[in-house]
Amino acid sequence: MSLTELALRNAVAGYAGTTVLENVDLSVKRGERVGIIGRNGAGKTTTLATAMGLTQQISGQVLLNGVDVSTMPTAERSRRGLGYVPQTRDIFKSMTVRDNLRTGLQGGPDARLDEAYALFPRLHERRNNFGNELSGGEQQMLSIARALMGQPDILLLDEPLEGLAPVVAQELMVSLSTFSSQRGLGCVLVEQHVGLVLDFASSILLLERGRPAFWGPTEELKKRPELLASAIGLKSNASSPASRSAAPQLA
Ligand SMILES: Nc1ncnc2c1ncn2[C@@H]1O[C@H](COP(=O)(O)OP(=O)(O)O)[C@@H](O)[C@H]1O
Ligand SMILES: [Mg+2]
Image 1 (tube, helix red, strand yellow):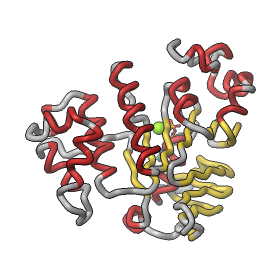
Image 2 (cartoon, helix red, strand yellow; image 1 turned 180 degrees about the vertical axis):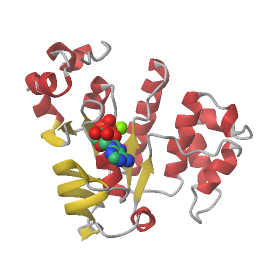
Image 3 (cartoon, helix red, strand yellow; image 1 turned 180 degrees about the horizontal axis):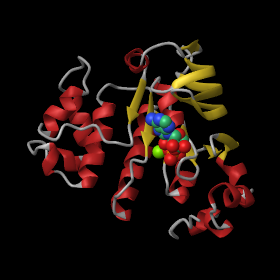
């Protein structure tokens, strides 16, 4: 059996008559980590939403295991192995951590909750707390863990580090990398912290006003700091791996 793969081919998509994405290509296999970077409004969220079937796809293809799912509803794409952590966290504030996780099981056994707790021990400590009692970081963990309860092959993450303290963000990235390697989870990460994405992902899609300015191996992008500078205003020194502790300089 071939590895599950998500691919966007020449995707053109938008919202109610507005075209946002033009000719976007992207692919990620199980166990692989891909990043999407670009300025605010560049189309990062729209790219993930297009993969999930939440935009108006005008042309091109969204392929899952070689099957064109372009006309399939979001629920069917989830069933075929796509998980999504939207930018607006979708946890239930009036439910406990445990019950929030259960809503993600999609009929799977309760024992899967232990996997979430192993990945995020903090959620185990907080399992009887309500969603609205959690810190921002704990809510992010819950949102990710809940998406994992459906055992996706490919997980799309939209700015999961937003608002987190650097040390918590770093921990979350390590947990995610470990899970990706151990379980063969494919990840597509949208993130403002460009340095973190360059460390995390083996391939990068760089978007500029809805168009791909770069799509390919991270190592190649690192050799072209002028691309990062023009597309996201990142000073060229911040693209070197050695300087990842320096905050990305966004224009
Ligand atoms: N629901 C929507 N309806 C219409 N336009 C939208 C909608 N969501 C986003 N857009 C527009 O699409 C463009 C890309 O937005 P988005 O994908 O959210 O960018 P990013 O995630 O990179 O910040 C922006 O110009 C934004 O205004
Ligand atoms: Mg966004």
